[in-house]
Amino acid sequence: MSDKRKSPRNRRGMQVVTLCISTTMVLILLGMVVFSVLSARNLSAHMKEHLTMTIILKDSVTVNEAHLMCRDLYHRPYSRNIDYISKEQAQREQVKELGSDPSEFLGFNPFPATLEVQLKSDYANRDSLKWIVKEVQKDDRVSDISYMEDLMDKVNRNLSRVSIVLLVLAVLLTFVSFSLISNTVRLSVYARRFVIHTMKLVGASWGFIRRPFLKQAIWIGVIAAILAIVVLGACVYGLFLTQPGIEEVVTWQVLVITAAAVLAFGIVITALCAWLAVNKFLKMTAGELYKI
Image (tube, rainbow, N blue to C red; front, side):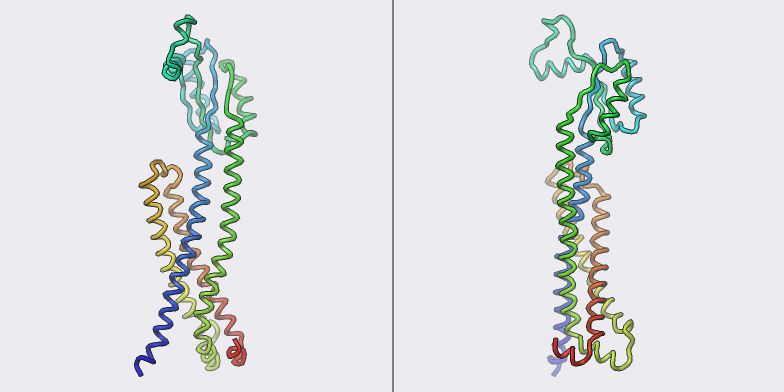
């Protein structure tokens, strides 16, 4: 007799465990998409900021004048980092790469002094570079300016495509996850549909009937989100161990936002699905409950 009394409770416990596991799996997928979108944005900024614009200085420019120009450029809104490469340093680097010194048979150092300017990510595009180049070329100390325009355009184009694909995937996965969790929650509520109807018959308000279902759904969402965050955290830890330098793309802001998004998704989706499922059965009559 005691076994019969425990069986519905055990069945309900299994439903809760199943709902928690399925919600965790869905939240892991959602967390991976959020993590990928945020990391792709940081990767885009990281790659753009490592694209260099080379300012070639005239031979008459002294070292002090070059440093003054560096100071002026640092105050411009588009400059992120500037490296001054003197004629002697440029000669040493080229000799190291070529294996010979052109100055030995030319009689002079043919390499000019340059400023290597790394732009901020917002300015690493064709339109911004046009007015930046025009502005810099007005300086009498500048001989020429070179930058990899084709490479910059290709990087921007490819990163835009990746971002669009990730955003579309995030939207689709959100709808799919809502559908999966909704079906699982609905099955859990379905098993207690006659309890809902009985409470409605004795005069309980809809809010009173919904309250325990919503509390249970929220707790399941929180537990599932914590489990998903632990799994995602373990994956990210493995990424840090195997990919040196990944911290420039996967920042603490990315990790915090991803964890917060997973927790918010877990609570909101499970609570909303429970709300909709309970309301559906509250609106049904006794005859309709027997037919489904």
